[in-house]
Amino acid sequence: MVINPQNDCTWTFQNGILSINLTTDEGKSYLFKTHFSVDDLYMKPEVNASFTIKEGELLTYYLEGINKILKDEGSSLDLGINAVACEQYTKPAIPTSRYFMMGSQREYEVLEGDVVSVYTNEFKCGDCVVLEPRDADGLTRLMLLNRELLLDVKQHRGYSLGQMIRVDPECVFEFRELNNRRNGHKYA
Image (cartoon, rainbow, N blue to C red; front, side):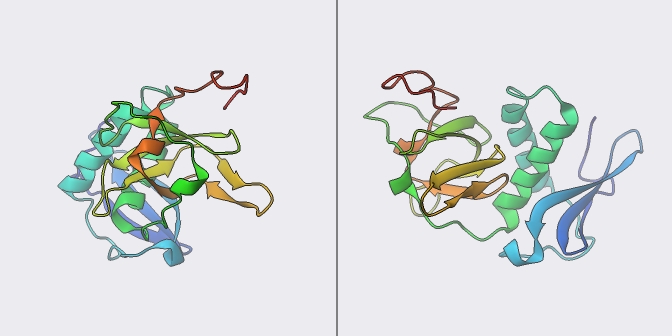
């Protein structure tokens, strides 16, 4: 499926949920609902605001990474669109580095659109797409690709699919880098 921003692609709201109308180069129209309600948005696109060239570039970066781990085009596109909406319109997340393991002096530099993993202090793995390698605060902005990631079981604190995570870059690992490594724990 090929989508170009100039092909009548617009943001809209369906029942209070940020959505996008996409038209492919073949002329087929699709409506994708994001995971974000009006209350989740920091900035709201105007109804029928065009999907911009910048958003198209972001979608391309995100799809390149997501397609490396997912082969289903529809699911990849859904996650990519959610990543664009998360990056462009949602409220910045509170930093939560303290809940995640840190790597020790490794030289792994993440790029926009990379799919990476974070590991909680409770040995849970979360797979994410990189929204921004370093924001104004020097933190890495990610979007969770899993259904959920519990940070603190006792406090029922965690993230769900599509939510933004902001952490110290040292908390970000290559995709599934630590699986089956530490103390015999399986991290996924």
